[in-house]
Image 1 (cartoon, one colour):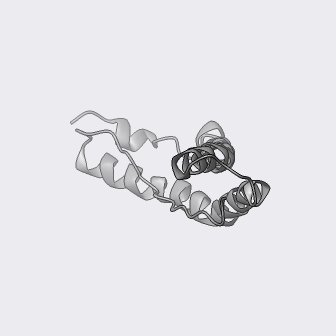
Image 2 (image 1 turned 120 degrees about the vertical axis):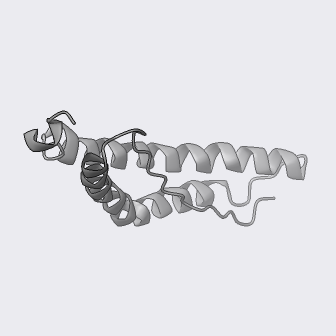
Length: 110
């Protein structure tokens, strides 16, 4: 029987390699906006995971492995869905709105 679950959130930022130093610094700074969106959304992720976990409490499984597998599937799907929402909201806010466009000054070639 499932009694509880736990999860952790890892925010990983990936920036294109090989950028000029000034462009890299600009991009690194702007990526902080996305990180902040995820930090601000962490409670939404936690609530979705808790709700999914609660939906499974008391369920009976034939083995510990089956219980863990079911929990990973249900809770994982719930938190991924909210993570994807936050990611899309962040893209809308910063990227699709052009607030993260690289200013022309950084586009000048070496």
